[in-house]
Length: 497
Length: 124
Image 1 (cartoon, chains in turn red, green):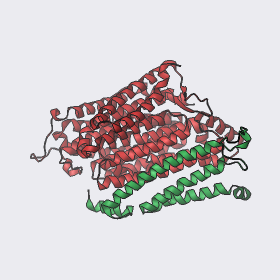
Image 2: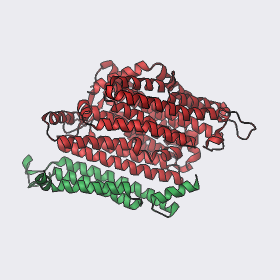
Image 3: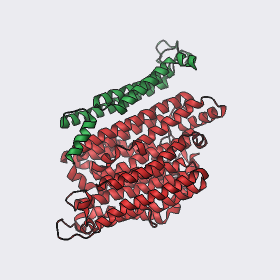
Image 4: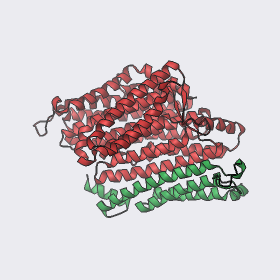
C-alpha cells in the first residue's frame, strides 16, 4: 500500500487530535494549531486527489486491518477528495475573514474554544465525506451537530441561544429519523458497510421481498438528512442561526455543515441504496417538489426581510432548494449539477456573509437596509465583494452561479416530465434572486450626503481584504473554467457506482 | 399481517414509542418536555435494536464457561450499536439541558415560543 492511501484516515484523525490538544494548551496556541491544521488538511487532501486522478480508480482503506464485513472502512474516490479539499479551503477562508469580528464578539477567554469546535467540525465533515460505514456516518453526524451548535452559541446573547436551541431540536429530529433508518437497513440487510448493504439491497429488491420496509427506510433516511440540511419546510431554525451568530460561524454553517449532510445523502443514494432503486421509489419526486417550493418560498422570504444577514440566510434556503431539485431530477446530469452547486454555493454564500459584515461594520453595526445606504463607498472592498457574490447568486456569466444555473437547465431538458416545472421555477427563482440581491447592491451604492459614518481603508483590514480577494478568485475560477471541475465531478460520480 | 404484528410486538411497541417521542420533541413548547421526548425517541430506537439482536434462548456473547459455539450466543453488533447510541444521546441531552438552563436564567421561562415572542419584542 502506498503512503498516500493513508491520507484520508490521517486527515480525520489529525483534526480530532488537534481539537483535543488545543483544548489543553495555552489559549493563543489554539488559533495557530487550527490554521496549521487546515493548511495541512489542504495538502493531504490535494495529494489524495492527485493520487486518485493518477490511478483513475477509487480505493477502500481498511481501518485497523479487520477485513470487510467486520471492520470499519474509509473509501476515497475523486468526488470525496475534491469535496474534502474544497471544504478545507472554504473553512480556512471563512475563519480568516471573520477573525477580527470573532475577537470583538466572543469573550476574551473563550475564543480558543471556538477553534476547538472548528477542529471537531472539520473532522466530522471529513469523516462524513470519506466514511464507508453507515453507523460511523451517524456518529459523525451527531458530532457535527454538537460542534455546529457550539459555533452558533459561542456568541452569547438571547438570540443565539434561542437559535441554538431551535437548531438542536430540528437536528435531533433529523438524526432520530436517520438513526431509525440506518437501524432498519441493518435489520433488513445484516450489514453496516455501504458496499455490503448495496449488494444485499439489490438482492432484496430483485426478489421483491420487504418492499414496504425498504421504502420506509429510504424515506426515513432522506427525510432525516433533508431536515438536517434545512430543506424548505424544515428551515425555521435557519435565519436566526445564520443571522445572529458570529460571521465565521454563519459562513461555515451555511456553506459547509448543511453541505456535509447533502453529500452524505448523495453518497447513500449511490453507494447504499443504489441509484435505480432510489429512483424507482417515489421519494425522489418528493425531494424534487420540496426543492422547487424551497426555491420560491426561500426567495420570497428573503425579499420581505429587512435585515441583510437574515436576507442572505433566507437565500440559503432557496439555494438548498436548487440542490434538492437537481437530486430530484433523477438523472446523472441533475446530480452533477447539484454537486457543482454545492461547491459554487459554498464559495458564494461564505463570500456574501463575510462581505456583509464589512458593510454593516461601517454602518454603526446596524444590519437594517436604511442604514446600509452608501456603505459600499465607506468600505470599497467589501462593497465590491458583495456585488460579486450577489451577481454570482443571480447567475450572471463569469461567476460560478451562472454555471450551476446552466447545468440545472441542461439537466432539466433531459427529463421530459420534470422539464417544465423545473425550468419555470428556475426562471421565477432567478428573477426573485435578482430582485433582492440587486436591491441590496443598489442600496449600498447609493451615495449619501454628510459624513455620519466612519470610512475604512485598505490599511485597517489587510487580511480581511486578502480573504475577500481569495473568495472572489474562487468564484471566478469556478465560473470561467468550470469544465475541469464538472469533469472531475462526473468522473467521481462514475466511481461511485 | 395481524399475526406478524403480534409476534413482533417488541418492534411494534418501539415504533409507537418512537412516534410518541418524535411528536413530543417536535410539538411540545416546554423545553424540558422536549428533552424528555428526545430521550423517549432515542430509547425506542435502542429497544428496536435490542429486540432485533436478541435470539430466544441464547445469552450475551461473553465467554465464561468455555462455550465457544456461535449457536450459544446472540448477535453482539446491535448491542454495540445501542451502547454507541446511548453515549451520543447522553451527550446531546446534556447539551440541550445546558441550553435550557441558559435560556431559563435569561428569560425565567421554559416555553420556547414565549422566549421567541420576547426576543421579537426586544428587537435585538
